[in-house]
Image 1 (cartoon, rainbow, N blue to C red):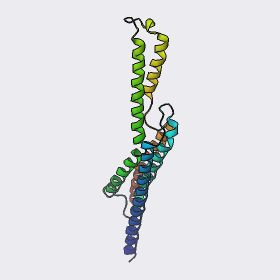
Image 2 (image 1 turned 60 degrees about the vertical axis):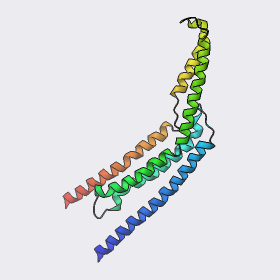
Image 3 (image 1 turned 90 degrees about the horizontal axis):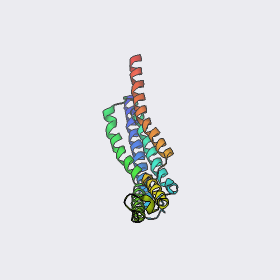
Length: 200
């Protein structure tokens, strides 16, 4: 009777976990869509000041971390029967899809806008450089006004190197750190299970 009750609790707990996770993931996806629309239509975008876009990156990272935390808890779902990789894979795969979507949607419209702005800026700079070079005599850049050309070349190099994603190093480092946690928890759960089996 106790084993039947324990099985009922395990099944009920697993069902409750999935209901909560489905609800949370649905809400996070809706939030990601709202921020994606804001970034695509309303946010003010500047190539030289992407720090104002960091809230979009934070939404992307925090939503992803919430789902990564759920992945880390997978070994706890079936403590009684031990960790079975093949039982966990379908659940992990079903969560990875929303995880990728939640990470991309808030920042993708901003990325596309920044790419277009950078292309427009580089095209305008090239026109200005060509206009300066139009007065050059062969390879004699001095006649083209090298004092006008060098700032344009430096500015073009800076624009070409600008990131078109609204992330900073701290955001990416945090995400990469937390991405390591789920595999470590799965490996730790498997090691503990093996140690317990050896001790018995």
